Image (cartoon, rainbow, N blue to C red; front, side, top):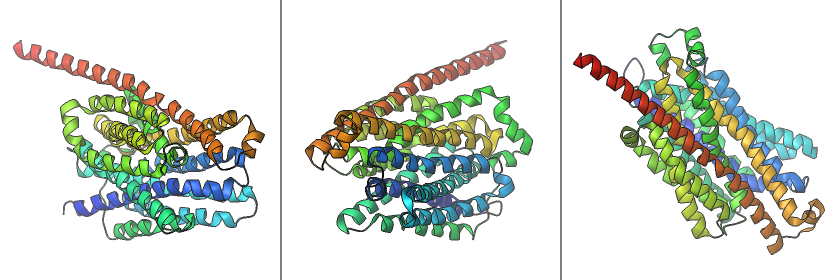
Amino acid sequence: MAEGYNRRSIFWICVLALFTAALSFSIRTGASGAIKAAVLDPAVPAHSGEWIAAALGNSFLGFALSLLVISPLLDLIGAKRAILFASACFIVGPALILLSPSMTGIGQVYGLLTAGMVVSGFGWGASEASINPVVATLFPDEKTGKLNALHAWWPAGIVTGGLASLLFFQQLGLSWQALIGLIPISGAVFGLWALTQRFPKTESTVQGVPFIAMLAEPFKRPTFWIFPAIMFLTASAELAPGSWVDIALTQTVGMPGILVLIYVSAIMFVMRHFAGALEKRFSDMGLLCMCTIPAAIGLYLLSVANSPLTAIVAATLWAFGVCFMWPTMIAASARRFPRGGPWSIGIVGFAGAMAIYFVLPEIGKIYDKAKLDKAGGESAFAALQPGPELSHVLAYAAQQSFQVIALVPTVLFFIFGAVWLAERGGRAKRGGAVAAEQSA
């Protein structure tokens, strides 16, 4: 116990909040194929891929908006209230999704489905807006290691949700509604636990940075804006493919795509516990630069995978590539711009969320266009019956959608490399100046 709060309990509340966000993400992904088949395919068969991708992407819009609003106001609102708001969203959002099929007409059904996705995203954004600054404050000298340890529970939640999806659909034969109903349970647990705890102020407040100065910090430091730009691409390489694997890979690799997501997430859970040691050896930018190589190769190989074995090989490379990206980007920003506090962290996370909001529907459009082109037009596609020909068309569409995303980590390799070299050069110059002063 220190400063009137229990550091261990607060850390594990943060873990459970992020675990719930990941569980929600994974369950929505796992249920997306069933929702598409039951709700959208009968009403809009030619555009159902775009519509379900847009619905999934709307959760990232909710994430981005709540993250942007709550981050600068976190110390005014209080981290505890933000956590409780997240808990409420993980109860209300799934409830709206469950109610959506009962509406009249596809417009109302899709509207309520979208609202449920957005509210669920609010919960995720409120979680990220509070837990990242809180953990950075709790462990000021171990940011990269502790933030990666915290974010190791993101893939843990994805594994849990993915396994639940397989159990509910393949073993128990339950509906997608039963699966979605698991999310509020976890949300209620961390909310009730948070009610019992007192939470600390954030790092910028502890340092005595005034509110206006915190808001101004990113604008006074032009180099800060490199990090949101990088995060936009980083999230596109990690979370966009993660949202799409069940719909796309199920058609191409001979096993449920959610299994690929479970496998990747298990690797990420283990690897994120080693981030602190790797960051000390290579620096955060060096670590990120090296990660882009297996990420690019893995994503490309996923696009051409045609069996469980080739999918596992490709997924292994992709997992090793993306496992450190999101939390290390958050830590890198927090370390370089501590006076920006939760506001600067929130801007970086906002950029990542908006990337998925824009990128995921585009993946859906690429998928829909490719399947129609391969089939020979909208009417020809509508005439296809379940069987080898339809599977071939959908496999081609999945391949095209993944190959576009494989370009993103290739671009990131050059960006991270440039920042890494620039910072190493700057440190070398400072070291030379200090040595010159000492010799004089």
